Amino acid sequence: MARMRAIEAAVLVMRREGVDTAFGVPGAAINPLYAALKKLGGIDHVLARHVEGASHMAEGYTRTNAGNIGVCIGTSGPAGTDMVTGLYSASADSIPILCITGQAPRARMHKEDFQAVDITSIVGPVTKWATTVMEPGQVPRAFQRAFHEMRSGRPGPVLIDLPFDVQMAEIEFDIDAYEPLPVAKPGTSRTQAEKAIALLNEAERPLLVAGGGIFNADAADRLVEFAELTGVPVVPTLMGWGAIPDDHKLMVGMVGLQTSHRYGNATLLASDLVFGIGNRWANRHTGSVDVYTQGRRFIHVDIEPTQIGRVFNPDLGIVSDAGSALDAFLEVAREWKAAGKLKDRSAWVEACRERKRTLQRKTHFDNVPAKPQRVYEEMNEAFGKDTCYVSTIGLSQIAGAQFLHVYKPRHWINCGQAGPLGWTIPAALGVVKADPQRQVVALSGDYDFQFMIEELAVGAQFNLPYIHVLVNNSYLGLIRQAQRGFDIDYCVQLAFENINAPELNGYGVDHVAVVEGLGCKAIRVFDPNELQNAFAEARRLMAEYRVPVVVEVILERVTNIAMGTEINAINEFEELAERGVDAPTAIALLD
Image (cartoon, rainbow, N blue to C red; front, side, top):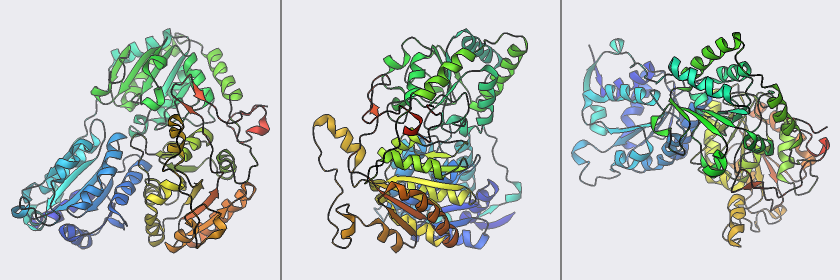
């Protein structure tokens, strides 16, 4: 047996579990871990500028590829509390990340020692498991359990808190005798699959709803195969966007109150059965349960038992990993197809495609300052099918989901339920770190951008290049729009006369100066007709300097983006497309 510090055993376990990258900020109480990382090697470290940023980088890293687990590291006290938002975001979206914090020595934990806080109690509601390891010999087993917890059942984040003296203590540990624990995931039985296919086959106008669980199961290809085999159209949720390509004949739009398509909502309202796989019936997808469920039957497949019936009770509920469920559904559907038992869905699919062709929002506006719709039109023109978009919250993200196109799994990387401002920059850096060859384009409004703008320095220091489209209306635009119901416009304006940048004409922060001060490149655009040249220049700068490049687009101050309180009552504030030239980059053209 080998004798080593307990924290060195932890590093060896992480390496054996597949970890090769960590994001963090060192500090006194976690320095033993950093010493072990340096001594043992094998885990690359990215130095964040804020510990919350490190947690979002870890999220972006996990979300990029199947099997990834992002790791974020911080010292005791405020480092752990700074990471609570990242843990909440990961927990809400079923994303496994491992958060490691330092802690005061065991003898001083209850003495209100400097930066000693009961972090496991604080993060309990937003982690799958959290522990303070009190015995050195338990350190490797705590990490073993952490990876088992993150991968089993509904994925989620874990926090391990390590007192300083526990890290430093010597233990006996043989990494050659270590094996990861088997992952436990519920599956779908033959009987369940037969009942689901029977219900599906009884329907005249069925839909598949594809949630983020499809990606957690790495099952997008099986979802598309199932849709094609049965001929049933697919509605992805925001977390499931990209599970089926936007230009696939069976992709019939997103549904919801905000990040939705007119044709998606219309098709859901015309359906008579909804078959949800790996989704949670989020309220911004459904609106009120009464409207969403009226006249429809439901099948719900989810890996977490407590999700079945949480929002409404389905006609058939199946607790299963999405991949296992699709395997079982495909087996039964193939048999029924061979026996000629599956219904012909061609008329229903054609009706869905006609809605997709005709129910378009207008994007082609020539206004200066630009309307946001035009920006997304230009992005569609400039960025190809391999583009991976990263975004989090705000009118920028809502409009982006209405107008952009996604063609591949894990190429819309979005914080779904939590929606913390500031998430986009660090998450995009995590994506680039996980897949340096990926063409990453991030999307932010000005307030999201300002929240964690300091993390751009990480992209400059560690050469993590991507393009960041910053749409700047100098407003908290989503909150301004929400305040219309209160007849106020209060505390949401970010505009001011910048004495150092009069050329901004009252748009406040000089983002170009800040971005360049952080070691990155930036381009400012006033006229939307200049966007193609700006995107081309951004690509050139990114390739030459290997740093993030920001393309800031000055928008008109006030634009109301389509949304509503029910999926059958969406307010369309702007002109709708009447001809192909009104929406020239729409996924299906009017003429």
